[in-house]
Amino acid sequence: LTWIGCPNVVVPLEEQPAIREQLEAKNCVPIFVDSSVLERAEGLASEVLWPLFHYIPLSMLDSDTDMIHKQWEGYKELNLAFKQTVLQLVRPDDLVWVHDYYLMLLPALLREGQPKMKIGWFLHTPFPSSEIYVTLPLRKEILRGVLAANLIGFQIYDYVRHFMTACSRVLGTDVNVESTYILDSLSHTAVTVDAFPAGI
Image 1 (cartoon, rainbow, N blue to C red):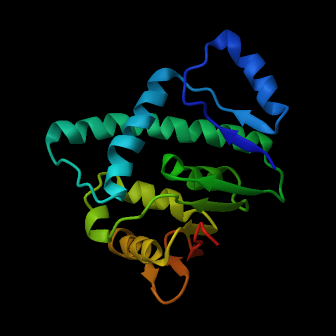
Image 2 (cartoon, one colour):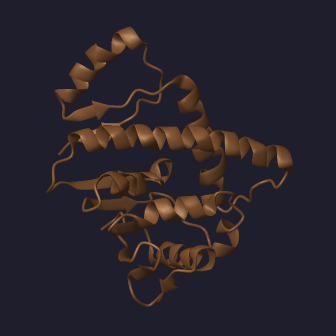
């Protein structure tokens, strides 16, 4: 088991080798990114995705929409940094498990690099109803990123249903909310989506 993560602080270049060595001794691989990338990615995740996923509506002001698009570039760069590191480390039989709303683009990025990779993705927060989700700029890109996983997990069934309905409304995927699959005609795949309660 290897953990790959990004320190939530900027680590000076000269300190990175020592920190990398300490973490790798514990099967942890750090990803060091530029402070501006980290700031913009953090902005999108904590100022846009987290509130929206907790039913706090986004502002529709043009200035806020422009800010979201600027933060989006940092969010993409962070996900690309994870892609590069994971693809360097992964072996053919490995399972890559991606966690949370900071890395919603990563499953698709990994799939581009290794089409047969086994990928799981789990969201540790609520997923909002489709009526709320559709207010998100870049909503298609985020759903497409997640749908590249083989298995998508949520904490409770309501979030599964919300996600499946959002995929149907936003992407036109074939969804039967009584099943645990989404049929995605664009990628010609069936993706398993299910609830995995944290307390069990």
